[in-house]
Image (cartoon, rainbow, N blue to C red; front, side, top):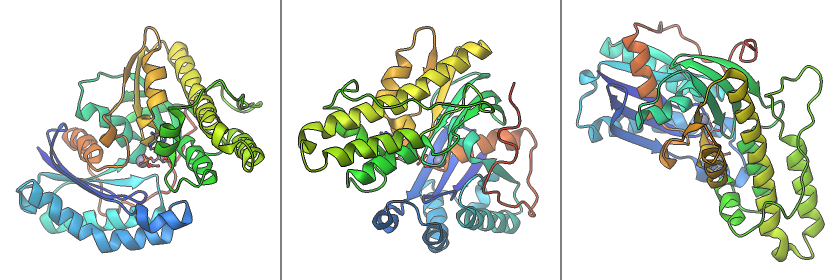
Length: 337
Ligand code: KG4
Ligand code: ZN
């Protein structure tokens, strides 16, 4: 079964053709980074306007690269939640139109589940497991029962982990997005050089919840303090100490969630899954089987959407042409164990 996947939940306009859920026949990602860079963040209106200009070219190109006609596709999968509403609506409307014209089945795919599916494109991983999704917009720890079912154990109560990397990088004047730049700068610093606070969670928060706004503020204050003196000497140590704390928090919660549920298999997805310190720290945990996607499948792409869509379509799941987009996942935090 050949599935065309479309992903426009944030600033990447992506399409991919995937056979039987794992064989990527073609993949196109049109990045908008240059449009958003001057603003140090994704500007929602610019993102949706770029998507509407780009999407037909991206889909044409992905079919051309797969050496296929649209009529040869067996089904279509598209991200419908969560994300920027204008961006989601462009991909969703376009894909609905295509499914209607081709008279092919359509399925709406959840972006968080799609990120967690990414390593399945490359490795045979069985369910259930602890899923850790860490990106610019999401930080979620979940018990993943199957490709289409997860139970959320913890989420960030404020900023997403990647967002904290981006905000710290902005303070370094490293441009946007800055996660990879902080990762590179940290290679020459010591994670122990500075002590930054761990989140203090209060009553009402779950033990697997996370928080990043306090850490980000502490790091930014430290950078301000060093800005005129000793900056060159300290910048790598501050970056490494920030990265160390941000990632140690993730590892702590993930290991605790594994212990709590008795699951020893971990799957990581999202842009921050590319972080070298996270890959090292989590892979070094005793008695845990940890699966990361390859670097190109960590960030937003449509192969993960087509791959997950294949399993949903095969199970008989179909979306109506009335399917709407959702900026937030309904009831994300409802299902604590
Ligand atoms: O999954 P993604 O492409 O988009 C969202 O769905 O948000 O993730 C992008 C995020 C950005 O915040 C970026 O700074 C971060 O992933 N990122 C990293 C690294 N590479 C990308 N963060 C830390 N270390 C990295 N190596
Ligand atoms: Zn994403």
